[in-house]
Image (cartoon, rainbow, N blue to C red; front, top):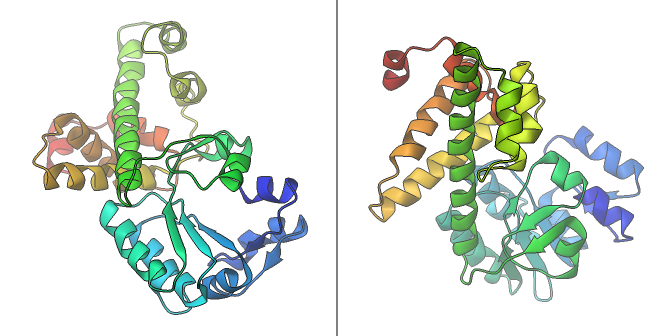
Length: 273
């Protein structure tokens, strides 16, 4: 996303908790600052993409956080996947400085980000258009976060079911690649199946969307469902499967590595995870 902003001619300043991750962007012409506070102080609009609610709050509201460098005329856009309560808390801190806050979680992983094909779930106008292909507005702060959690909950449930289908096709003597081809031409066709399926058949899981983040998103979606007394048994089962995969040390692998939790796992072990 930052590369696309740089390529479009934007004046980009970057920061990361691991400075070496900024080096490729600095080599492309980005400036570097030593803290979120300094980034915000030197930029009109600051974007944040971090892993979880705790990190989002720390980057925005912690010591040397973004809020410390904000003020009237500036804007803060959080494109992380967090829960609504986190978005609302960050919004309060940012607005208290006189700046503007926008939650804009994205749907898409590494390749869509590189190709500027992300889907932004709230609008901040031309800068989002540089990084993505579409944007949606859902009203008050918290709604964008909720929509992203729903999308990722469904995605995780689909991946769990897809994994079962691949393994079952093998067990009954069918070519799993044939299953993928049939799915690609069926009413339930999804780019995820045709993109990740052939790699899953070969037990290859190059990381695009880390498994640990997928499980985090399902967990947050389940908490959202619990808050409104909505039953989500399919997502709950998928969450348990992703938890088992994490216990195998697959948290940093792609979310498609969840299939490994099914290969040698009994239902009794899964149910007790």
